[in-house]
Every structure is written in structure tokens, then in C-alpha cells.
Length: 573
Image: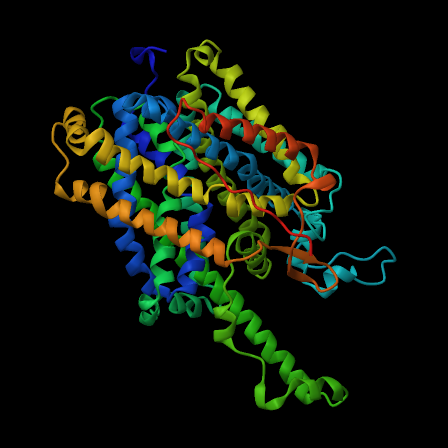
């Protein structure tokens, strides 16, 4: 496709909203509050904002500049800089493909919860009856209704990664629905996406604002908010705090996937991407802080309810002499009710989004309303990120003449169908374990390596002086000394430090394990297992062969960049 034929955003606002919709995702809601809780509450904001300025904004700026200058996707853009760097763009496409395979399963869970919210009694509010109708299901009774609904009703989870079963039909239908919606969002390329982002980028803020008003009025909410903003300054001396702050900035902005390059490639040549990079970066970080206030108000409500229930149970035991055994087990010198202990319980990821929030929602007045709003917000956050992920695959591929001859509707549909078929493996009973493995190991090392190569290439191969001339050609002025210092020294050093940390952490971690649901002990327990052998569904065998083929391409003599993911080996116990 010729450069003059390339479609553009209708206006700069569409581009900004597309970047916001992509960057502001589930991690802002379920990862950042967890890090605040783990690393000193409000004190964590200090390293977080420092890393935003030193690492996040400069790298965000760099990717937007590359995309807008070259008006090509990641493969074409890096090939234009050097014919030997095509593998770098291909690595970004492959990483985005890995993400697309499993990311929509989160949206499928959101749909599942959303559909179940339209009931007179939320299904995770109480345990279902057993087959004899004589009492609650034992597994639910031993755990909690929210845990049971997520692990048994939603996931129908197996006891290990080796145990496979049929596809969960409800999840498969929700997963199919997610991919149909994704396809409709991108069916005509940037023209479709540019209209969709007006909704996907703004509606979550409306829900968050409504939740903020409701959250701070809940009983005990201020306990959670006070906990968040009470800084533990001693955490600033902990290197892990700074590493997690840098990591959160890096992954929250979506660097390395090629999505930002793809989005920027549809800009007008003289679009002011410098200003937009700063705006989007601060919106993303501001959203994380905003979402944390909402989350900690919910935390405070849940912790206060649990604390008061504990006190009530203790009071009953103390006053009721018909339970001598329970009275003896209580242990008066060490009464187990502690509000701070409840607030210290740190939860992230799906545990926060689908269990902790569900637990809090069921205790609110009109829980169905709050459930619909919450899971609608999660769904739009996830779908907004999916737009960027799929665009990162489609845009660079359509830059090739062989694909540019195919209509947008057909080509985009084939990409979505490919991801859908491979992704069905995540709807099996062991699918959640595969999801965890992909989420933990599928992109971390590769993304750090990709962005490190990007910034080194621009600074020392393409050249800072040449790069600043390109920026001057687009913006009418050269980048100031701050940007050049960040690209040439500070950002690469930070990326190298993160890369080394992850390698050391991986080596010291020993044999990788995963958390498996034990229905007898009603909790998640560490487990090991084999990802090879007869237990692997054929869909994953196909995926492995596909990945091997792409990695072979990356390591071919035609590319100087070879991005390899070390295969995780799960030892049998």
C-alpha cells in the first residue's frame, strides 16, 4: 500500500483516545493497588512517578515518533531503519499474538459475571444446594460462595494442569462473543477503531467515578483510604519497591508490543505526538491512582465487615457456654480479630477482580446494579486493550503487498478466527493454569529485550542526531536535552537493570510452580506438573509448532535480532 493511500485518524482526539483505551487496562485496576498495598501505601507513589518520568514517558515518546515518521507498522518501521531489524518488528507481532490468545478469556469471564448479575440473588452471594437439597454443596461450604463461583462455576477448574476435560460451553460461548465484538471493533481498520474508542476510553471513567462516590460512603471505606495514603517510608530503601515501580510503568503503558507504533502510523505527518505522549502517560498513571482510591475504599468496606463479623462471632462464642470446644480453641489472650491484618491481606489479578470485588459487591445495597456497572467497566477496559493488541498484529502484516490485496473485512476476520481457535484451550478445566503460565512467562523477558533493542537502535545505530532531525521535520522543533539524556543513557540503563533482575529472579526461583485449586482444602496450593506429554490438548501442540516456526524465522540469517523465550519446564512432583 502506498504511503499516500494509508488511512488516518479523523482527528488527533481519536488517536489520543485510542492510546488511552489501549494503555489504561486491567492492570490499572488490579495490579497497581496491589503494589501500593505491598510497598508502603502512598510512599509507593514516589518511585512510581520518578520511573514514569525517567522511563515511561521517554520510551512512549520514542515509539510514537517511530510510528509517525515511518507511517508503517512495527515490522516495516524497523526494517526501514535497518533491513537487519525486521526481526525486531516480528518479535513485537509474535508477543502481541501470545497476548491476544489469552487476553480475551479475561473478557469472557467478565461477560460471564455480567450475564449472571441479572438475578434476584447474585449466584456468588450464597452456596447452591447439594443434590439431595439438604444443605449447601460441600466444596462451597468449605470455601466461600465467591471462591466457589469463580473456581467451580466459572472455570470448572481441574486439580492440576495435567487434568484436561471438555471445553466449558458457557465460557466458550462468552469467549466467542468477545472475539465477535473484537472483530466488529476493527472490521474496517482504523476507521472502525476510531469511532469505538470514544466509548471504550471514556465509559470506564464514568463507572469509576460512580464507584468512587459509592465507595467512600460505604461503612469502613475511610479505613481503606487512610491505609493507602499512610506512607511507609522505610519501603523506599527496598530495591524491590523501585523495581516493581519501573516494571509497572513499563507494562502499564504497553511498550514493546508494537501497538503504539501501529496507532501512530495512522497520524498526520505533522501531528504533535510529543504533547500527546505526555498527556496519555499522565492520564494512564492518574487513572491508576484514581482506581486505587476506589479499590481501597472497597478494601476498607470489606475488611471492616469481616472484622465486625469476627467480633460478633467471638462475642457469641464467649457468651454461649454450649460450645466449650470452640471456646477453648478461641484462645482468649490472642483474639483473632484484627482490622489491620484484614487490610494487610494483599490480592492482585483475577483474585482481586473476580473474588474480592464480588465479595464486596454482594454486601452492598442493590448489588445487581453495582455488579453490572463493575463488570461492564472491566469488560470495556479489556476490550480497549484488545483493540491495541490486535492492531499490533494486523497493521504490520498489511504493510506487506501480499496481505494488502486482501480486504480489511476478510483479513481482520482471519486473524480473529486464528486467535479464537487457538484460544479455546483456555476454556478447558486446566485453562486457567495455562492462562497463568502465558501471563507470567509469555511476554516479560521478550518485551524488555524488544524495548531495550529499540532504544539502543535509535540512540546508537540510527543515531540521536538523525532521530532529532526527523522529529524537527515533523514537529518544527528538536527534542530538548531531557529526551536525549533519557534515550541515550538513563532509560537503557534502567531496562538493563530490569532485565538482569528478572534473570536473577528466574534463576533463584528454582523449579516453576503454579497455584492449583484444592477443593478439599478449599484454597489454592502450590503445585508442579508437566506441560508435555499426552495431557497437552492438540491446540497447544499446534501453538507450540507455530511458535517454533516463528522463532526459527527470527533466528534466520536474514535477521540480526533473535528473540527467544526459554521454555518453562514443569517437573512432576
